[in-house]
Amino acid sequence: MVEDVRAERNTTIGINVSGDGSIVRRNQVVDTGGSTVTTSALGIQVTGSGVRVLNNDVDGIEATDNGNGYGIFVVGATGAIVQDNRVTNLSSVTGASAGIAIGLADALVERNVVSALNDPPDYGIYFVLGIGGYRDNYVYGATTPFSGGTNGGGNDSL
Image 1 (cartoon, one colour):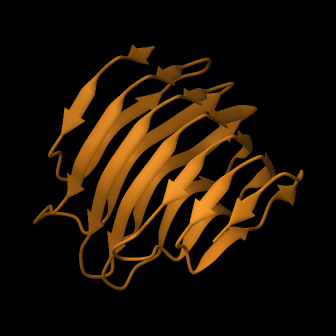
Image 2 (cartoon, rainbow, N blue to C red):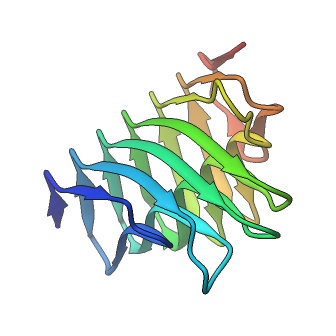
């Protein structure tokens, strides 16, 4: 369990948790990216069966060159829940960027806010090689607010 942590100015990943039943809750991840070793930047990354990502703030993800920038990335997980998070200020030079990305996983994504005012991300909520659904989320400023997965309703975007 990772709770109540402020992870600031990490160059690649703010919080990385792997393990069945893991919980990442009430954390702040601020200004992640800028590595000279790898080009991708991830605010929170979780792997494992039954993982939960709950009520976190991720602000400022900056991938470089061809790297991907994800605020919250759920990969290799089954039965994941991503709920009540806020993701803002994503940037990627030429790679993919998303507020919340689900890869090689199945997840329920609900009641999250993705807001990008400066450099619009490619996706707000992105199921890339992932399955599951999303409901009651709000995405502001993404090129493609929702991609993949099953829309359970109540989602909105501007």
